[in-house]
Image (cartoon, rainbow, N blue to C red; front, top):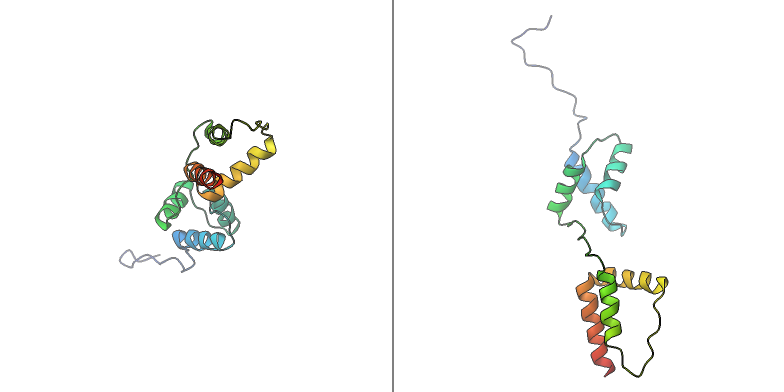
Length: 130
């Protein structure tokens, strides 16, 4: 029988630092040009046999400087298109906006870092046209 005065045996050093694994994976994803999202990180780590929770991944990403996606207000993309169309010259006929145009606008907004920056860029372009 085990001696009650002896300390319990330690687990082998195979335990992993979950936060460190999350940081490594997030850094690798960013290097590949991917956005580190909790859902994808949880799935990859689960394949490696590491169980992590969504709040844990979110907190580690937040501490690393990855901010959660901002929720878009309904109609904000339509508002950007309206702002762009509002400034068009009265003599020009307004072309109808297709779904492909909206998808391209959405990609441009995300590349520019948000709707406010995209609208500012459109305003700057308008000044150059004058």
